[in-house]
Amino acid sequence: MKAFISSVICLVFLNTCYIPAAIPDSLYWRQNPPGDSAVIFAPGLISLANRRETKIVFSPSGLECLIGVGVSNAFKIMYSNHFNGYWSEPQTANFIANVNPIEPFFSPDSLNIFFVSNTDIYVSARLNQDWGTPVKLGFPVNTGYEEYHPTVSSAGTLYFCSTRSNGSLDIYCSKYENGSYSAVTKLDDVINRHNSQQNGAYDPFISADESYLIFTSVRSGGYGQEDQYISYKRNGRWTNPKNLGPFINSTGIEYGSYISPESNYYFFSRPAGWGPNQPADIYWVRADFILKLSRTNFVPYLRNQIPDQTDTAGKQFLYTFPDSTFADDDGNNTLTYSAALSSGDPLPSWLSFDSATRTFSGVISSLTSLNIKVTATDTASASASCTFTLNIIQQIGLNPANEIIPNQYRLLQNYPNPFNPTTSILFDIPKQSHVLLKVYDLTGREAAVLVNELLRAGSYSINLNAVNLSSGVYLYKLAAEDFTKTRKMILIK
Image (cartoon, rainbow, N blue to C red; front, side, top):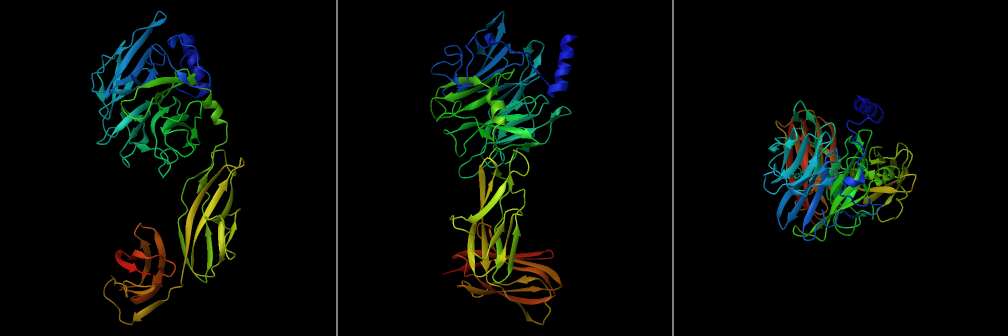
């Protein structure tokens, strides 16, 4: 009865579904507790020479342990339990007969063990004091792609990795509802970020209450090839991840994230080098960094790219980028903005930038193409930036070609083609329509907006001066009512 009352109090005051009792350090193979710098866990007992220890996890009670190990390309999961103050000799988990099982994880309610075999996720349910035959999870968790690294919250939400989006690993989640897993959701781009310096995310550990997520990623500013990062859930959204720092991350690789049941220690694996046959040891470190990092400054980041802009010479240019372009997880109204050319030079004299309203304005004086860099800086002087292009083209004349009303929509081939630097484009509209005619480069980037207005029925000719565009192949596309047509033109300079 006392235990029940205590658990209810924990639920009320800590808003979490499961709080395990404190586990004495003697249950960690009687090892001396680590400090703030990661050290090898249980050398000679768990971390053995010439063996690859990929992950260690404990049951919520701390009385059962699973260890993922491998030699060459053969993997298995070892099992040990604690009885009368001592751990049993780790043996192959006899209830897991799958080929090359890896990445074990105990559910916070201690009722299930998740693991991976042949790039699919399996679960074994507790049967009294034993574990049942593993069952492969169905769709939408497992697919024809690869799935790895299962980790589960107290609410039953499954976090895992998959190659289903772009061929590289990203982190997804799926809620457990009415006896099955619901639709799979890919985590925010702030977690699964892909660019020239950052390559997605994998190997997650989700806290029982889903308040933080630890994972592995390759990102700019890291300490090695693959580092460990932490992100916190704030206002229903994941924060910009923080590197766990040099006392955990090294110049090599770290993976296999796991926090002990009472949240005192962080475990991970570090191989001796790159490659599947490299031996690896389990490391552990005090988990104080979880609270400490949550209190340090969050670096702002680009959430939505500013699109390239196109306008014509002689006109008033006015553009305000949304306040959702950049995000700062430290709170609202913490960012100030500045703008300059990407070269570092100031904006041209005709173009001004109002940092309070995030607005560019000015009367365009000449044909040009500007690469503009916008920088968002927080109160701790940390910053993020975004570069977009402002293309200024010659004002385009739109002229009725004749008085004959055409009977169908048409977009004709431009003439001359190839051209340098001017060409004419003719099109027909059989009835009054809103007409959109744009020019794109072969990457799909918008190069010019030629028409964007309501036109009466007729045949039209429009002149394009591409003096500010570089040589190459371009596409021009007409859209009116339910009609669309795209043609190709070639600019040679």
